[in-house]
Length: 110
Image (cartoon, rainbow, N blue to C red; front, side, top):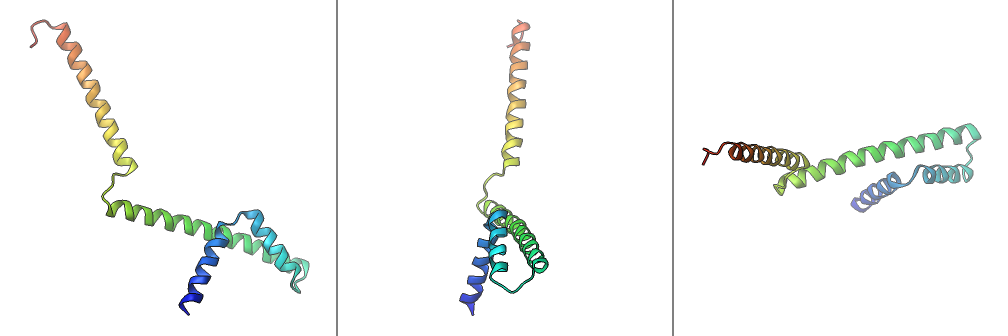
């Protein structure tokens, strides 16, 4: 039972990673090999495309969430953390430049 579940999950992931054209092609092939009429086949292909896109979105969200969890568990800085530090460094560098310029213009400064 577990291997069937794994196979279903892997199939779903593989299906989600297919391009829209590949999904349409697969759906059309399944329709041509079945007893569906043209309207049923169109609805089937449309639903197949819709489900593929929804699965892709859910998979993307899941990967993003898991990635964030791993980064947090490793205590790695996030992009926002690095951007904030870069902004602080730039502000400090600007302050140093300002203080040096003020010191050079005031000969009594140490």
